[in-house]
Image (cartoon, rainbow, N blue to C red; front, side, top):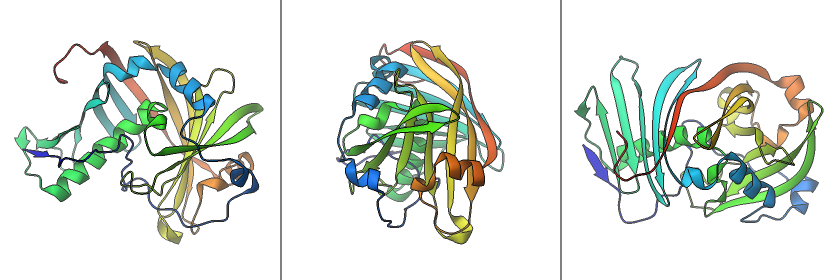
Amino acid sequence: MSYRTPSFQIPGLVVSSLLLSFLVPFAASAEEAAAAKVDRLPIVDRAIEFHGGDVYRSSETKLTIRSKSGAFELISRMDGDRYDHTVVGKTSDGKVRRVRSTNDTVEETRDGVAVPLDETTAKRDRDFVNARVYFPFLPFRLNDPGVYKQDLGLETWDGRSLHKVKVTFEAGSSTDANDEYLYWFDPETGRLEQFAYSFGTGAENGGLRLRKGFNYRRVGGLLFFDSENWGVDGGGDLRVEQVTPEYAARSFEKISTVVVEDVSVAPVEGGSPS
């Protein structure tokens, strides 16, 4: 059973509050204070084009994401501003859960049986899908409306100079508009090398994650990569600004490896994902 979205625009960049949560206020560093928030940055524009640019905006992509926590299949169709995303995985009791989210509707089935959705559960399902679409298709949504960038200059990681960018969101533009991220790009090509985010608050629930890319390859004109998932949990309120080479070396442990596999990309020719 589907739930039709009311007539307001769903932000293209929404990350599930199950994965990421609000950050506590903090005093901005000197480099952040000097970096104005802007809608566009040349390094981000370069990154989007390097990763596939216009191919992403008119393609249907199928892939599987596998990590320590399990696996799920993702079918993502983009046609300009129109999107049609489906996530297929298994519930804790072994049922096949299929959640589809489009500009207009949300629908869920379990073992082929439609699940009734109201406004609250439809929003939950939309966030569930968006959270799983966001990471494998970075950096494509970083130029969406309401996404602001700050150029923090170069920072050296593992002997490499990387271009560091902070990303924040316009208040009210998404479910998690207070979330903040750091991205590090190759300064020449624009390739996304790693990204970091915080989640939760408090000594028991707070944490930081750093995803470091490897095994880059192109499929159908789009660049995909696997990632090592590093991080730290607990220890009070942790802010993404704490993620520096020194802090990561001192505090982070490898948590998992996230693998993107069984990838296929085809041009959009009309219709919906199968």
